[in-house]
Image 1 (cartoon, rainbow, N blue to C red):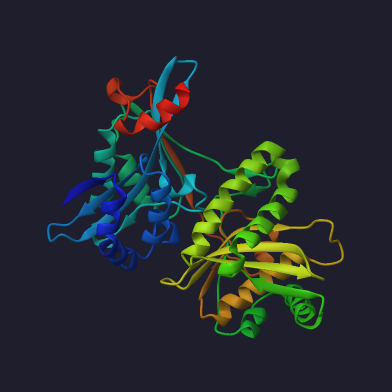
Image 2: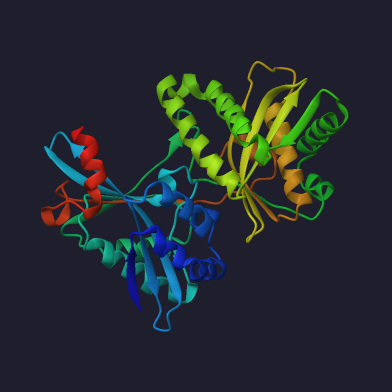
Length: 370
C-alpha cells in the first residue's frame, strides 16, 4: 500500500472512477465525501486543497482524506501557522470524514496520520467527523505525544440548548402514509393537516427549482435565511454566510445534488428549503432553510419539511437525514439520534512543525500582505 498526495484538479478527475468505487464500498460514506461534491469544492480552491489517496498493491483506491491548507497570522506569537481543515466542511458540508475500504480501515487511517504528521502544521481540525471513531483514533495515534496534543471539540448553539454533534435521521418506508403511521398521534395529526392544507389551498404552492430559475430561487433562499438569522449572528456575518451558501447551492443545483423547494403564498415566497440528494445511497440530507417569520398563521417550516419528506419517499429515497443539531422538531418528524465526532490535533508549541510553512501557503500569505 502507498499514499499519494494529490494537489491538482486534473489528477482528481483521473481517479474519479476509482473514487466512486471506493465510495460504493464504504458503508460509512456520505455525500460530502463523494467525488461530485469534493471535486466541485476543489475547483474553487485549486491552490489550497490537498487530498490524500491510499492505493492497494493491486492499484485499487482504498482510502481518501480531503484537506484544505489554511495559513493564519498568530499575533501573540508573531508568526504564521498552517491549519489543516477538512476540505468539505470549510465550504458548508454538514459532515466530514475519511473514506475507507473497511478491509483496510486501520492501516489506511494510520498511514494517513503518518503522512500528515510529516507535513508542516500547527493545528489539524477534524470537526463534524461522521464515521467510526476507530478511524479517528487510528489517524490521531500517528502523532507524537511529545510534540502534539489532541482535544475533543464541542459544538453547542442556541445558548447551549442544541448540540450539533447529535444528528437525527429517519428511515423512510415506501409510502408517505406508512411514514405518518410511524409518528406520534399528535405529530401525525399535525402533518396530515398541513399536507392537506398544502394540497387543497389554492393560494399555497411548492415549486421545485429548475435550471431556468436557479439564480432567482437561490437568491430567495438566501434572503429568507438572512432575515431569520441576521439578528442572532449579526448582519455582517449573516450576510457573508448567506453569500457563501448561495455559491455552494448554485454548484449543487447545477450538478444535480441539491433539491431546492420554495413555498409560495399568493405569489410571494414565504419559505425555502435546500436538501442534498445522494442518489447512490438513496439518502436525502437536509441542509439549509429560511422562512418569513411575519407569517404567523401557518407553520411554514414544518409544512415544507413534510413536503420534502413526502417528495423523498415518492422518489424512492430510503433515509432522510436532518443532519446537525438535536432541535425538538426533528424528533416530532421521527428523527432517531446518531452522534458524530469533533477532534483537533495541535502542536504543543503553538507553532508549525519543522519551523516552516506549507508549500500551499502562497495564496494566503499574499492575501495577508495586501
